[in-house]
Structure formats: structure tokens, C-alpha cells
Length: 190
Image 1: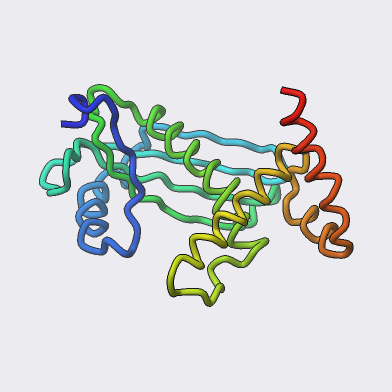
Image 2: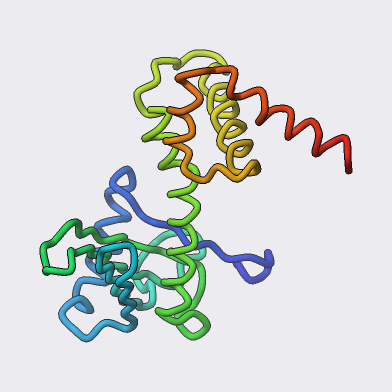
């Protein structure tokens, strides 16, 4: 059991797990017609973002240590009410509904999206990782490591807009030298 190992999992079920996704969907679907278990609205950054969460036990779902399933609906609208985006995340977790609330699950999923946005999204949009053509050997892993290193170095030196900073550096590659020297100087002083 998950508790015996000392940790739990929270996983988004995606299309590559079609049978599992369908089972989670079928289990949560009746709840979507009822009042949500948790709602969060954020109206900062020029948009209105709304997260709605429903959670139930994972009865009938054959997945290792599955105890709960959930749906988190994410909607983003303009202040005038125009829909910008809407999606649903289907969640499965080893946490039991007696110990995890919809609010807890929302926080855990949202923390994961923060990681996704800080790392994977940047790698996909700035470095076009999904379009890379290296499939043999360790080339893809090496390039992913180099991209992660570049992103980390930019963040450590205070550059949080990775796309803009990458574009700025690409216009004059000698601009990387001060970033590298800050890293070396920081190591020597510790």
C-alpha cells in the first residue's frame, strides 16, 4: 500500500491510458452534474481563472493502490466573459477520500502544473523540444539535460522570462559569458 511506502501518488490520466481514462471518466461523470466539492477563482494577470474540483473513491478501478479519482476543470475567461480556454484533468491518486479533500487535491495538482509550466512548457515552447529529430542513442537525453541546465542557469541568475532572455542571448552569444562567470564566481565564494 502507498502508506506503507511512506508516500502517495497523484497522477493525471491522459489519452495514452485510454482504458484507465475512460474508467476514471465514468466514475466521476455523475458528480459533474452536482455541486463541485471545491472551487477557486483567480482574477489576476488580466484574466479570470476558475478551477472546479470533484472527487470520489476509486471503486471499480483496477490500478495499483488507487483510492480516489477526481476531475479538475480549468476555465480561463477574459473580464468581459469571453472563453479563452477550458479543459478537464482526470486525476487518480493513492490517497483515500477520508484523508484527502478536494481542496488538498486541487493544491497538489496545481503545484504539479506549476512545475509543468516552469520546466516542460518552457522546453516545449522556447526550445521546441517536441519537434526535435534525435531518436537514437542518448542524444535526446543529452539535449534535454542541456536545456534544463540552460533554464536553471537563467533562473539562478534572476532571468525568469526564459523565452525573452533566450532570444536576447541568441542575438549575441557573448551575452552568455557574464551568466557563466556569475555561476563560476558563486561556486568559488562558497
